[in-house]
Image (cartoon, rainbow over all chains, first blue to last red; front, side, top):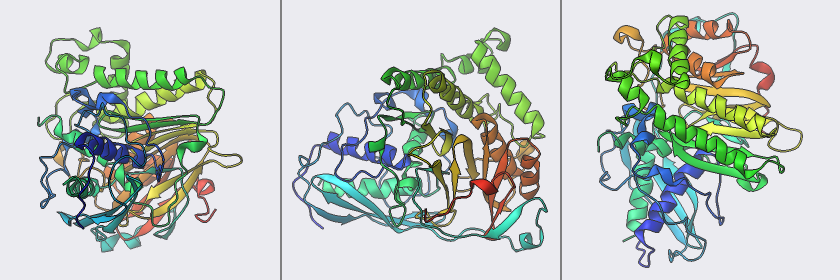
Length: 180
Length: 285
């Protein structure tokens, strides 16, 4: 979907950074000011010394250029955008499918009032390795139940995901597209 | 820029929480007078404080502490204590108290896990890298700073490893979703916790970052291991070690008083210990 009138790249960078950080904390941010960001993310080598240092999942995405500065690596002195002034027309934009070793990832972003109001995953990997031998082995001290996929109201989520890098790429591709 | 490239996975690791709009409705931050997210320790760290009477300086102080730790323990800053020790320029015994404490914790955890969790070493190149312990430890310390500042209802979320106190809303604990391993828009279960730490180690987390000592690959019996207990330092270490050990690691976790385990197996079952059972929340609540 062609979109023509666009905000500055810095605003977009701030927006995607805010999106990433906000979503970790399970904020849903329709039509609201995004949370304040630490400015330390830009250009500080120290920020990379955490457990992500292996970067093991960084190399699998194929179809989207990675030369775009990542949200984390982009200094974002520009404040997060306020609603209504971005110039992005309301509507929905679908990103490209990004292949990972686990399967395809594709997202769709809805813009409303100049802000990202929703992000939906259209495709996510569902297959994972299975081990048929495990069923016979149950620890007596542990209860067991069938794995469910629940929808639930939550405050926080424990556990990151291998799809995150591809997910970011797909989001970035949409923002690049929106940005012309 | 190779060194800074992994930062791209930092906040990205946060995104799954955001891929959850299909049915998962996170509570927004409007209910929290003090809330902030910063990119630290290679991930996004968020703090929410519900108590209206807590000074903003408490939140600022917690982040200042975390930033300070991030710098001092950095393996990317050539002048950090860790880098200097790694190069042999700074004897460990002359390092700061915090660094010595963390390295001692690393040794304790490595010994206790029989080497399954070699906390001191970088997982691929074997260099000094205690970051696997630093995150949990520094968040535990940050929580104590908030305790001391009078905060009674708050949550710290460091890239999916969590410490909570009190309640996010009247009459209920913090509802912590355990990510479904195959469906990023769903959770496997919800734990309702009023005080304690929750850490998850999983195959889907930053690729295959978990290896046993001596280069052995981690067990493939489990898709994720979540440990609940009083300390994030230990919960994180136990989750990492148990994930590497596989099913037998789950029983091992339960031998630690105060710690419970919740695991998702490769054959699509959930296993949980007695300590976790009372925390399992009704998803519809």
